[in-house]
Amino acid sequence: MRVFNCLSGSILCGLTLLLIFLPCFTPEWAGNFILISLSAIPICIADGIIFAILLWRHNRWWMLYLFLLLGSLPVLACQFPFHFLHKEKVLDSNQLKLVCWNTEGFRLNKDTLTKAAHSIRVLQPGIVCLQERPHTNLLAWDTIRAAFPDYPYCIINSREDEVLNLAVFSRWPIGNVQEYYFPNSYNKILQAGYPDDRANFPVIQRPSANYRHE
Image 1 (tube, rainbow, N blue to C red):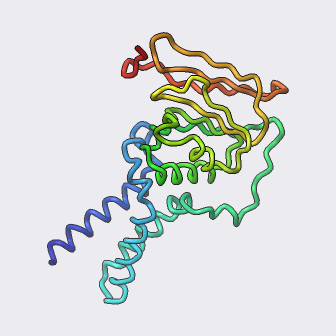
Image 2: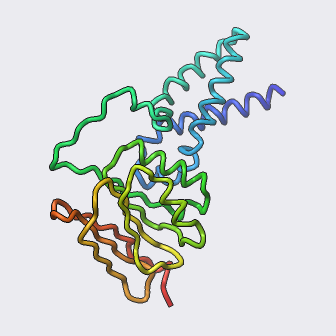
């Protein structure tokens, strides 16, 4: 039992440290640990339970788990809407906050979609661009649309392909919509903007040899 406790404790400490330093990773490396990010809440709950048990038993290792809990607070704050404690900054009329997210089909899972949408909404962007949106037969567009209730305006590519579809959500009306399709490929560009030409934002599904349209 002692060996099991040491092994499980070491694994939990390693996962928590990885979670703490995940924001320091490059986007390419961080993408390999997406499951760690999505498991932030269970990891922190486990740390809290072990911390309480060790503190109750007057075990000196409680300080380690206290350090881990404090270190993971910034990451945990991204999972909960703590930002309601602060006044939202009013952006200048010439400023636009845009988030582009490679969904990887949301793993065709509604829970993954919900968690991803929550992480995006916490950032409070004005525009949300989604790459690799799944086909509506695999994950219904209405389900994806409902995950972004704060964005009343949206567009998707008119040619619904098996993979690599696109979507744009906006807090404001969208105009100047243009689509470009790469020959013999599922890759495409969906470009949109504001009717007053204030800004244009293309969403590009880059060319890839892995997906070819026969």
